[in-house]
Length: 613
Image (cartoon, rainbow, N blue to C red):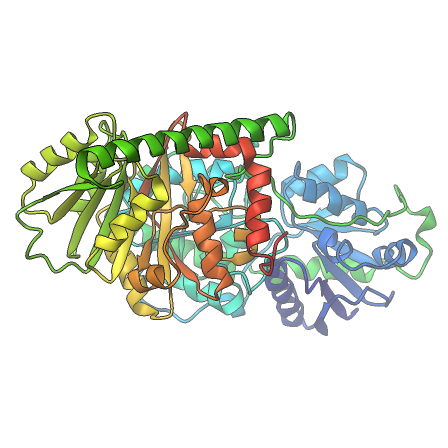
């Protein structure tokens, strides 16, 4: 029997290192001598050289063309990518010199054969090491996967359900290979422990490709830990059976609700899945016969005459998935757009100067507030102050206030800063205060418009709690939001702020603030909304929101997060959908996008030591 070398890139996605470990373990169960090899190219023609994720392993290696071609000819590549994606075709480049390619999904085998690459199926199964110690399942619903527009849209529809339960929605960006140093991601034993704590794993396909791709690695490790898998309809799941080992449905929310209300069924499916992957179809039973076949392959001969051989060309791998960013790139007419942006900002500045003069004529000062309070405000001792900035949101502000007032298990106050609205916003807030005298509310009615940064800072200055929740008047929170964020700050005294995933609703449903705090991602694009709970002393120490310039219009939040990062502060993401973000056809961000690139350049100049892309 040939010794088995499982090659994987140490700088590639850490998910692949997990799978490579499973292969080594299964080969040893079969009685083989097996070891994990990181980065070194296959060189032994008398060994079974399994190369996991060839697009990463060869693409990230950096060797010369001839060196990579020779190594690929001694390899048995194991393809792991979904057909139709860029990574699948990159992988195929490095499979061509090999005598045989394995793919973990039947659809991948079909796609490889279609382009002339000899391929066989390697059905993943369980191995003993992926089983965590049994613990209480304190997480009702778990999602693990890359952030794509489709996934964000589907998951957002689950928000009303999941807001009432304990969930963890862990998404990540594929701008570069992900590893254990990326917050929010878990690998190896940490991942298995997380799965063992979870009752249900929800699987949502990355795109609309039909039939859906069965994500074998994620399914197997979840089932091995008794987690009930609920997935959108997929192909390539054999020998597993839908309805027995996992649940396949077009109605994710309805199925999850049934399982949460009927835990006995969820437990039964979890047990059946666990038995299937660990005992009915373990990895050793699938890998063993393939290793026996590889024993019969002669890798010592020249690959020149092999069927369908094509010379491998070195490719630089760029694992970059395009996703909508706050700063869309406007290359056409960029100079003109910047001029429009500056003109609009200048117009606002002139208007504010006029209002300041009027305020002085009426009140003797450039800035003046008219204050209103509810009866409950005077004696309140809030744990959290919710600062709501308001400008011309008469039609939606009541929804925001009602949602805050409905918060559970937390004492809070609401500080509303009406930045001189020209509609009936102030009257609407006062009507809410009359209807809810039991809610501690301070309304600061500004007699001149000062802009969003000043309005927020003004509200923060009047906040009485040590924790300040920032909200815009068109957003909302679910009942457990304030409690979860406050608990997160209490659990880590070094944390500067906490934020949660937001359900985006309106004209563009999806998710916002869905990613963990990671400064390299934050330098690429601002993905954290203002709706966050910040320690008041942190805001005071760093001067709150900047009020010093046109080039911050619409990016005040991004500037604050970068300023905190530059000072060594950090935030913690609560991976639950606990807030709501209203999307509209026009907003401050749409104006900011007129000069997205110049604004980003200005921000970069301000914080030059951060890890900019």
